[in-house]
Length: 132
Image (cartoon, rainbow, N blue to C red; front, side):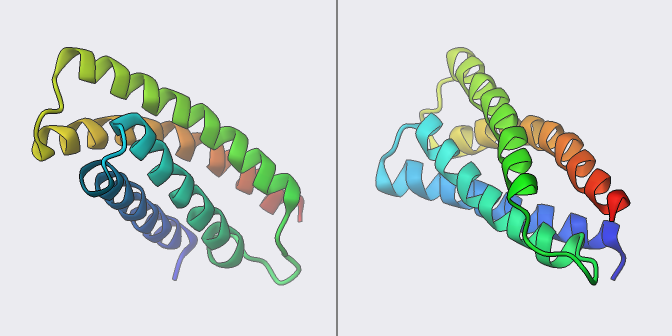
């Protein structure tokens, strides 16, 4: 499978973990929408990092990298800040009073942070891959 297809598969899996867990934490556990979004985001970050390292960007001589993990976490924190700011702005404009509205807010904020994180993470792993 080509690297771009694998990357997209990981993003889709991560997005599912991210939004699915956020909705569960918000609606079933009762966490605030921002805290639920952060929980889903962190779980997806861990899953994505492991899949990027072991499947998408794997080379014969590759192994888990603390440096890439730290860089991935830093880019994720930037994207998380953007996501939480988007949720804050959207919930001031639209009340997340029902599950559909809450889901729409989460999807919009997640899409924005996904674009930011993709741009940053692809640079991290591509730079490391080129250096090998």
